[in-house]
Length: 461
Image (cartoon, rainbow, N blue to C red):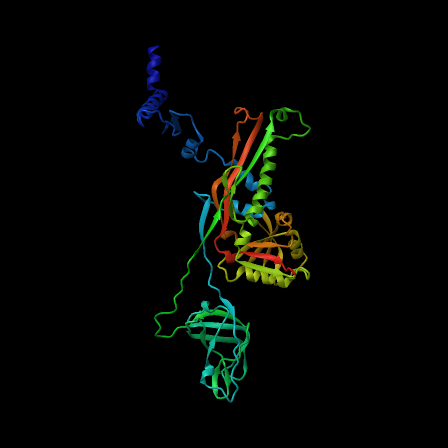
């Protein structure tokens, strides 16, 4: 007997028992004498928990890879093609929001294009003076111009060095100064010779496009016009999305012709919930209302459809032409600070119209790519790549001819309560003899660069 005792004292089991007793004693007398949990490494390196039942909080803290986020994994795999916007938001990292109200800042880029507001008429050759070389010009958006900028007038040809022969190049102007009211004074870089006066500004029609180009400084210039960008504060509400699934005990034990389990009901509920969230994330209106019956406020989130900074109209009576597609690509990828890979989510009529177009060498729509767990038909142009996918949500909302160009890199998901499920013990509570699960998420979507996203709408009468 004594021999066995000595063998136990020398064994690893005795060392383990001593360590466990020490940890238990320390944990018992810590925290003002209250028994608290202690976690320490065993002889083989495994973590030991004493003083309290093993909980999910301890598991996630001490062994973060042990427990799986099953619901989120199921959600990203469950019929993603039906809810593309929700799918994109789940495949990117969500921002944790500690409040139901989300304040965020969006940044826009400085416009690079405007038009001539007031037409300018050049003087006749017998009345031309040096004043024709420097012209006061008013545009539809004078604020975007600064002194020393060069301006391109596309479609309006300039002149060769002799000032009489039309050039192959478009007319270019130079901004020399600005009035207090914003009007600009410009010189012509490749201007016209009128009478004996060289390099005059030619006539400019109202509506003529003007494109901002680079600045041109002199050798002695040290400073230039200031340029600052201030983000604009926006706000959205997180909306609490819920879905409850129940199955009675008799239904559960009843013999069935097919293998239909409670998990199948959960899957159907998750899909229905995602469809509802997709419509809300797209077309929801930001509001806070008061439920008089529940005596609580209800937060409703605003959809990204209304947050987009651009809109393109096409003539549905004529049909969707290749010119429309080129113009959409141009508007989607220029003047907004976005990326060169975007997604077009649209209804059945819009997608069908795109599929009916012939493929040319300028635009290639034959490629297929997999992004965010979904198959996209990829349209490749000189402006960028546009992944096209059908969304049944547009059809459900009576908008089969509409579409939305989204830049996934510039969509932010805010999560106040991450998507998860909770088992309700309604039997023990004496409410109903059922198995019950509640699915919950409180979240919203925001766009960081509104001008990088665009609505596509058919023209209305």
